[in-house]
Structure formats: structure tokens, C-alpha cells
Image 1 (spheres, helix red, strand yellow):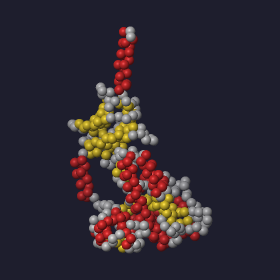
Image 2 (image 1 turned 90 degrees about the vertical axis):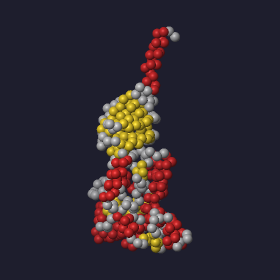
Image 3 (image 1 turned 180 degrees about the vertical axis):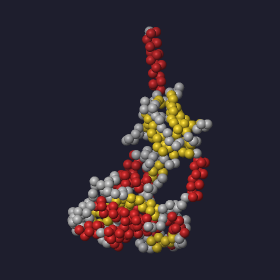
Length: 439
């Protein structure tokens, strides 16, 4: 090789070496502020390795990302919140990228990598929590002054706005109107019960997306979701109310969706984030949450169904299962109530009648009240009242087993059997009253 050619070759290698050392590029960063932490998500166009360390005086968090450079959109980033004052970055001599978070206070960091999905590529997630000592002191102080919370019931009036729902055959009554009227009456009944309060997914004549209704229930931290509807059929003679819970097929399809999109920090199952869990663990956690929610849904639905059957004709002999979208929340017990057939002239008249609407609301509220008194959520006023009440009793409903009842009251199966002198499940029957022992 001639001297001139050798020189050109060496210069080319010299200039290409930095580029060859870059395996990835940080294309941007997104920031969310949650009540208990700040999350930063760095979008990266390939897999990376990283390390994190903290500095004090002033407080900083340093994130070193190996074999990475800053993309053009990341260079102009300007983000801040209650934890982060600003973000700086600079190229390192070894071909990596150093990102420095100037902090407003000392934090406890947590980082992890996420693989690509349908919406995003590779991501590096940095969560910033307040120092554990301070957080614990605040939490203890809050516990000292916090009152027992109310049970929250999310009431969903079906349809609305441009979606009128079913139409009455005689008076052209719109489903969206009567469902909102019944929902409002049900809210008043529940709000009147000590230790319980209700929230509405819609308060007027406007449309709310089906998945948005689920999200609102989760935002309100609902303990139960109740969707109110009115059925319709081409045969005007068909009548009766129905109660639905989620089918196993509907639960499976929703589980697949959650597992595919679990990087969303707002999606929590039972208070546990799935975004940083591997596929197997996330699947197990989701399955446990869904199973518990489905059992609770069925128990609550049975209480409501029993009351509706006393009020009038029920369309089916048992609780129905379907894949309705609004029932698919994996950690909130949910039911959908068809209050009657609006296509039936007699039931259309009933559904328009304020007196009948009150009876409906009273029956549904009584069923919900019975369910929560049998199995009050921990930390609620109802749980405190039930714990103070001696002895605790449970009336066995159709489909319940001793193991399900023991899990609901958080007592061991052995204790439950001993307290009631029961050797096996064959000795129990629908309507039997069980004594619930102390945990």
C-alpha cells in the first residue's frame, strides 16, 4: 500500500472509530409525576447497558449509558418537576453518554430496561422516590391522622350522548336516559349508607368510551364497578332483569392486552406495577388478580340478583357471563345489570316510572350493601365495624365453597371448619349460616 493510501486509510479508521463504538442513540425522554415518585423514560433505538450513582451537595443522579450517544431530539430536552430541576448530558471519552439529573432533594432511584412493544422501542426507565426515612416518617404521620376510608362504588350509566342505546317500543324511551336516572338514584341510596359512597362515570348526557369508564373507576379507586343498562329484543314479549359478570374468555383476552402493554405506569394490578416484571411473573400476578376479582364479582352479583328476583321477573335463572368491555378491569370486581327489557311495553313503562326506579335502586343498593358487609375491604370503616361486631356471620350463597369464604374473610380454612364443626365441603348448603372466627 502506498504511503498516501495508508494515510487516508488510517484517517478514515480514526474518524469511524467513534461512530463504530456507538451501538445506540437516546432519541428522547418523557417524564411523569406520580403522587409517590417521578418517572423518566428514555427512548433508545437499541439495547444498552447502564449504571447509576448519586452525588450530594448538591443532590444529583448520574446515569451512565454505555456505547450510546444523544439524538437530535434529546439534545434540546428541558424537563422539570418536584424532584428534578433540570437534565444535563455529555458524551464520554469511552463512547458512552452521561446523563445528569440535577435534583431538588435527595432521592432513592430505581432503574430497569423495557423491551420493545407495539408502541415503543427499547426504553430505560428511571424512577425517583423520596428517601425511605423521610417517606416512612410522612407515612406514619398520615396513618396517625387518617380516618377509616369509605367503600367506593363506581356506578356506570350505560350509553349517553350520540349513543342513545336501546329504544322503547311504545314511548320511544331512550336507554341512555333511564340508565342515568337509575344511576343517580342508586348513588343517593349508596351515599346514604354509613361507610359507603358512590361515584358516577358520567353525570350528564354525553358519551364516555367503554375503556374510559374502566379507567375512571380505577382513578376513583373503586372497590366495585356497577354498569346500568336496559335490554332490548325483537320479540316485545321478552322481559325480566339480568345480571352479568365477565366470562373466562373475556378475561383471557384482557389479560393478553395488559401483558402486551404493561409498560404503562398507570396500569396497576392490585397496586402492583407490571411494567418491570418479566413475562412469567407478570402473567402470574395478573392471573391472581383476575381470579380474585372474578370471585368477588360473582359474590356481589349474586347478592344483587337475589334482590332483583324479589322485585320482579328475572330473565335468566342464574348470573350470566359475557365479555362486555366495561367488565374487564382485572382488579376491580365488576357487574353489568340489565334492569329490564325496554322493548317490552310494560317494562318500558316501569323503567320510566320514578317510583319503580327507586325500587330498582333500593334493591341493587341492598345487594351491594350485603356484599360489602359480608366481605368489607381492609382499611374501610365497614371493615372496622364488622371487626367490632361479634360474632361475624356469613350466609352461604350458591356456588360458594369453604375455601372461597375463608379467603374472603382472610381466615384459615382449618379455623373456619373448626369454628363451625365442618369436616368437608359436603356438609355445607345454600342458606347455611357460618360463624367467622377471628384471624
